[in-house]
Length: 256
Ligand SMILES: Nc1ncnc2c1ncn2[C@@H]1O[C@H](COP(=O)(O)OP(=O)(O)OP(=O)(O)O)[C@@H](O)[C@H]1O
Ligand SMILES: Nc1ccn([C@H]2C[C@H](O)[C@@H](COP(=O)(O)O)O2)c(=O)n1
Image 1 (cartoon, rainbow, N blue to C red):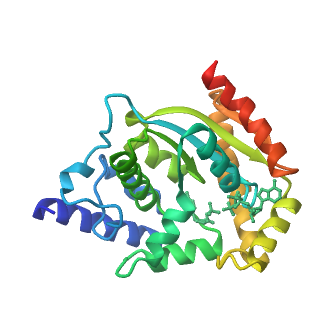
Image 2: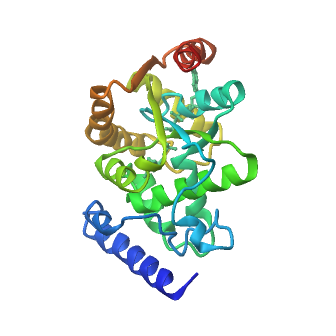
Image 3: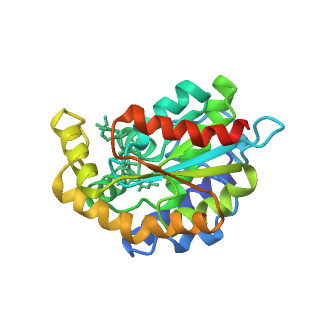
């Protein structure tokens, strides 16, 4: 990494942390105008840092579908079905954050863990860079240029960061929202925890906080996209196969 880039990236990561400590993570992003790879987010890195400056893939813009819904609404399950049937690549913001948390030497590990356990949302510079790097890597390895982005954008900070860093670089097709009652979602997550998910947030205490964040921070983002007629709401209660039938109806729209 060039000295200048390393210095910008390192000062950015300090900003992320200091704003996080001050509980105002959204502010820092205003000075963040292009994708700069944070020094510690190198799981998806390739050797030349310049490749990260912009998401340049094929001549066509990458197609993106956001997949949203409450914790346990079935986003990951249905994304797997979509991958098999429609050839999209699945990028889960939560999975990318969990991987980054586990990466030895990550300076964001503690911050990510604190957010996950307490149902808070990680500052967008971290998440958006992980997503952009994963998209770039996925395209380089598989040629896939269609992405399901699961669990993002989750709050205003996520949305603002994405708008600044990514929105011009991709073609947002629509936003799938799985609609599921809190009761069903909680039951699913607890069952997932009991079955050995190893997730530190599949417990009642974390779920309460995650639901608060969903109602207060994520629903307004869904409303934002709904006002743009981009939301495709799907009933997430019921058998996974039945839910997937509804998903297929939405995808028919793309083919027709
Ligand atoms: N339609 C369904 N019926 C019953 N169980 C389901 C259904 N869909 C998913 N599940 C199960 O519920 C749990 C949560 O599903 P999944 O991981 O797909 O949800 P999610 O929305 O991605 O959750 P999170 O936001 O917590 O990552 C999993 O154990 C999954 O197997
Ligand atoms: N945009 C995101 C997505 C996820 N996180 C953190 C906080 C979530 O509670 C946790 C788990 O996500 P899930 O696997 O349920 O999608 O990951 C975040 O901070 N920002």
